[in-house]
Amino acid sequence: MAKNHVIIFPFMAQGHTLPLLDLAKSLSSHNLRVTVVTTPSNAKSISDSLPPANHPNISLAVIPFPAISGLPEGTENTSQLPSMQEFLLPFLHATKKLQKPFERILAAAAGSDVDRPLCVVSDFFLAWTLDTCRAFDVPRLVFHGMSVCAMALSKSLWCAAPQLVGADGSQPLDVPNMNLPFDLTVGEVPWEIMVNGIGGPENPFVEFMEEVGWADVNSWGVVVNSFEELELSHIPALESFYRDGARAWCLGPLFLCDQAQAARDKSKEAEGLFELSRWLDERVVASGSVMYVSFGTQADVSSAQLDELAHGLEMSGVPFVWVVRAGSWSVPEGLEERIEGRGLILRKWVDQRYVLGHRAVGGFLSHCGWNSMLESISTGVPILAWPMMAEQPFNAKLIVEGLEAGLRIEATGSIDADGVVFKREAICRGVRELMGGAKGRRARDRARALGRVAHRAVGDGGSSRDAMTRLISELREC
Ligand SMILES: O=c1ccn([C@@H]2O[C@H](COP(=O)(O)OP(=O)(O)O[C@H]3O[C@H](CO)[C@@H](O)[C@H](O)[C@H]3O)[C@@H](O)[C@H]2O)c(=O)[nH]1
Image (tube, rainbow, N blue to C red):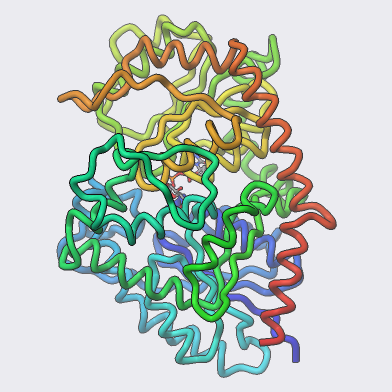
């Protein structure tokens, strides 16, 4: 009997979970049944974005999140961590305790004639899922959420980090096997990679990442939320890290894979979007005149930097929608009145894809998380890049220098004592250039061209659609 069941296990962080829910929808549109494994407090938002009436092929398996010392009680998602720096590692360790209940789910499915899984797709942080999959002879596909380029580069530089410690920051980097579309210096390698040199093998974060890395490269394959036309030249470099000929499967942009279904899901959310959509509609004097500002779900930005940003946006004179996460920050006095009718500051979750797809929106000031990059170029919106952590500096370089679909804010030097990297004047200049300057116009044209390619990739005969068909058939044969 043909295997028709896929088990997906996302890591509990929105930036990691959302693309895997899109993968679930895409698999379901290929007539596969999907089980998404999650924990109680994450289950609500997952089932809200996969309304059962619209997604009868997708179900949830809910397992309890372990209570461990060192983590605030009730924490089940990284968005609930008071500080990523302090609590991410204990959170990552807590997820290892999900192994036993996951084993029970896999045992039940693997022992059944109708439910035997074609594969498990699990986040790279959930390294221990590889052992469980091997125990039940089910292929594990790993998912990172990053681009092919950033993944290959991160793996290469992780190995090189011990030799880079102490090197001059301005030293150019030559990355073996990669034909990078941008220049890179030692000083631009993110801390999350350099820690492998600075911290040494005994550092607890390095130890954890080594475990994750081993399980990653020993997986059956890697699912990538990207499309071949964007990253074909980096695929061999990425695949060279994997064992036994494991392949990288570019199946994205995953959120575009089931547009008809997305539109039906959206109608459910329409009430929540009513205010925002009215505000945006009123701003369509000239299409593409509004700047959207958001820094994803993880970044911690200092209050002083948020003040600079608020003043920079005000000074620019450009209409904007800004989604702010920092609960403790207050808008500088009098600013909200001064920007009334021109700037909208929101302190809640908004559907970013909806905002980027609205014709009033013409630019995105972003931290360069990979989901945001894909969503922006897929909707033809150019990016003003403000990378903050993890692989975001690589994404910024790829988008700005490699693909020329964005611009950068001029850095005024290093971070000051208040955590300010960008001053209001530089932010204002960047916003004005992206929204009205010649460089901004060129970036917009490039973003629109890339958006057309992204849509073709997931359409009939497109590279991502074909890759999905091949992946399913190869999994059925193994
Ligand atoms: O109010 C909000 C805030 C976020 N989003 C969505 O949340 C996701 C955010 O993802 P991303 O832009 O990738 O940012 P992060 O949440 O910061 O992502 C983490 O995960 C990414 C994928 O691995 C990495 O590229 C980043 O560096 C890492 O910080 C996107 O789909 C957004 O559309 C909303 O819809 N509404």
